[in-house]
Length: 444
Image (cartoon, rainbow, N blue to C red; front, side):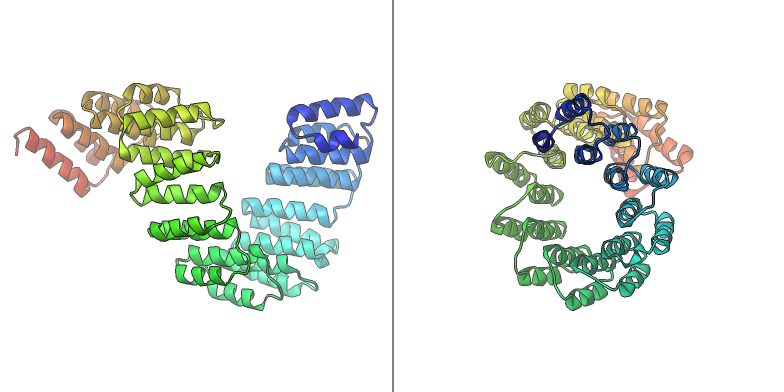
């Protein structure tokens, strides 16, 4: 049985293992079932874990904690609370591990009131002296923006470890108090890579790149996360040369670092460099994720080369990335529309599980760019029929389409619709579209 437990890596293996447990008559073996539920948790299958758990006649506290931990990690706070209540109703007593999972679930959803109630339970059962529970409370209060309460828990702790110090540091950095975060950092009796990275990320987030760089240079052992944080910081600041320099210095970059650099090139108006980096990534057999593909498609939209768009489209469809994912499908529509592949864009648009203002605007802009103003007007009217409320950007897109196609009456209608029905004050772009529209029609 030990071999089967160790080798269980997929849902199919999980089902086979469960069948084996039933055949062996081990459905009430608490040790085997605790291992099984932990495997369910690692495969993010809480429903399976709950169904197996429900058949246990007398679950132990440890088995309850395995179930609640899985609900905390893979489900919602409501489900975690349901497991907690189930434990209490069965006559079991929550312990440090139970409360740690409950507090983490509160932290994950930023639910301060429920977190404070859990804190009350911790004090009642005497678990507040446990360093792990205390650290979870610090983390929860910090993530909820209540750094004062996090500090109070920290100050009352009898025993602290590097994780406790780091959780408090995270709290101060999260609310932008980098002076106090640095004070905590300087006082820490010991630091790990997570601590260093938290400080660097805090400085990057607050726009203090020079301080982030100095701390990065002082860091005794840098890892992929350290480089990625700084690469992303310099990319957001527009310094792609230095972001690339850091990327090239990194010994071991992960997929997040590639994503930060590629998206940085796109956002800073260097789409060709983004495509080059993607090609380099592929040559090193690094598998792209959906975030990189969205950035790449944005780069292709800016370049506007149909053949490149076709290649990227084919790459997405042949990969394991779910092209029906909303963000992927929206990016595919935008890329194909702006690159002139309107037939493909139309097919993708119609296949979208839901269409919003952005996807409609992508299609209308594509029609406009490629001289199909009448189709853009028709699509705008369909958008209104679908119950979507246009914003200033949507009106800029349709007015531009009318201008390019010389549709004066339609342009005037949409301008009046914008001001009278939707109460949108015309921007300089809207006025420029109307002046251009009248000018092209010789009606100045």
